[in-house]
Each structure stands twice: as structure tokens, then as C-alpha cells.
Image 1 (cartoon, rainbow, N blue to C red):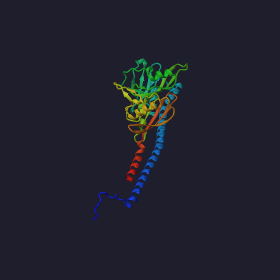
Image 2 (image 1 turned 120 degrees about the horizontal axis):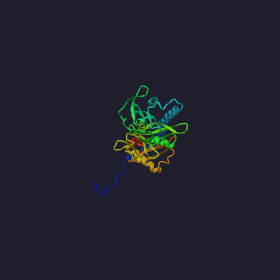
Image 3 (image 1 turned 135 degrees about the vertical axis):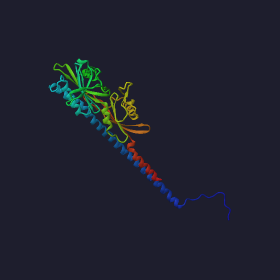
Image 4 (image 1 turned 60 degrees about the horizontal axis):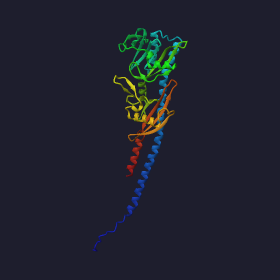
Length: 356
């Protein structure tokens, strides 16, 4: 045997290895490139679909919201015309309460339909859950807010003990004061309803005598809780949400279970700004709107944008909604990108896994 040298010659790659390694590398590169292209194209398609979906959902919200906002105005116009033509006599408490009672049964989304007179008298029909009552205030009897169980035609019958000892003067309520100041039909600012205490807005329509003197204000309440309820019924992807802001930034309603207001120590609800919401997505989106658009007054058309929250991308559309009586709100739809990208990410991972 010949003596082996300490330095060994390097082993040469076999022909098999020389053929297989480039082939495997080529397959891996092709699969990886295919996965990347597939992921990129999928993301572009998702962005387009997400844009269309945001706009479609926002349009649906605005369509239903306009219908809700139109109803109180229509009710008021009907009652003002009926009073002018003599078919509604405000001196007849039973007749007036009966008409309001019929209307509130027909329009299930309304919280309260009523009239406040310049004399301090008040007549209304209200809905609390599934219970409808009629309410009467007579200034000549001390202005007590008396709640009655309605009869078979909506006339006051049995007196309820709920809040009959509370004094109520419609002329001092925010909706009445705002209408007197405007001297025309308006939406009131957001305020706390008298009974039960909840946040809402009121559509009003003044009634004037032939000499132009104000005699009464017809009004219909719309609870902000009702708006939140209808928002929660509109699906926004799997994990998305929607909310409504007043132009001032006040949070009107939200599709989530988070309260769009804060409760004071006495249990009275108080409006909050959108960036004060306890919901982190609502809070972050509202704050982004304020900073990106330098306030909300510049938002005069639908806008779409993205923002990142805790490393996750959110797809947003904001759109203004206004009416002739003073509504000036912004509807906002927020959809997490993961709602769309989940399956695409899974497919990309599967493709890469297969490459190995």
C-alpha cells in the first residue's frame, strides 16, 4: 500500500448532484416567484374589492339613514297641515293624543311624537320598548308631566305614577328654544330626553297664527340608540364596524356594543367626541380623521384611506351626509385588511411550504 498523504484532494460533485441541485433551485425559485406574484395580484384584487365594499356599505348606511331622518320631518308636516286645515284641534287633548298614538304605532322607529304650545301645554305619544303611553302637561294645573295608559283609541285613561310629579315646560326644552330662535323647521342639537333620559335629536316644525305669531311647535324625537341599533344590523365584513360622527366630532352612533356616550354620576348620558370612544378602532379612526384632514370641516365628499393600528391595516371610508334642516354628519366604515387577506396569506404560506 502506498502511504496516504495528509492533504486529501477535494471530492468532486457527482453528475447526479450537478443535475439535481440546479433543477431543485430552479423549481424553488419558480414556486417562490409564483407565490409572490400570486400574493401581489391577490392583494391588488383585494384592494379593489375592499374599496368597492366600503363604498357599497357606506351607501347602504346613508340610504337607510336618510329614510330615518325623513320620517320625523314628514310626520311634523302632516300634523302642521292637519292643524291648519282644522282636522287636528289642539284644544282637544283626547283627539290630539289619539292621532299621535296612531302615528307612533305606524312609525316604529320614532321615540316620541308631540306638540308643545306657547301656553306651556303639551300633548304627546311616546314609545319605551314595546310600551306606548300618552303624555299630557297642562300649565293651568301646575305643569305636571302626566303619563297615561292609552285607551282603545289612544285617549288618556289610567294615570301612571312614573313621573307625574315632575314639572315640565316645553318652552324651556332645547328643541323648543332652538325652533323659536330659528323661526323655521329644524333638527335640534343632541340633548337628553326628558323621559326616559336618553340621548337623541328632535325634528321640529313651528305652527304660526295668521298674524305670524308662534302658537305651537310640533316635534318628533329620534333616539340615537335607534340609529346605533340599525348600524349594528348592517354587516361590515367579518370584523369591521361603522359609526357616525357629527361634523363637530361628537359621536352619534356606533355598530359596536361600546356605548357612544359617557354616563354621569346620576346616570344621565353625556355625548362624547369620537376620539374619546372606549372602542380602540373608533377612537383611532376618529383621531386619524382629525389629524389627516386637519379637522372635519373639509370633508365634503367621500374619502377612502388606510391606517395602521397595532400593526394591522384598517381600510376606511368616510362620507358626509346632510339635509336641509341642519343634519351635518359623517358616516364611517372601517374594515380590517385581514378580513380579505386571510385566505390569500394562507395560500401564500402553503405555496412556500410546498416549495420545500
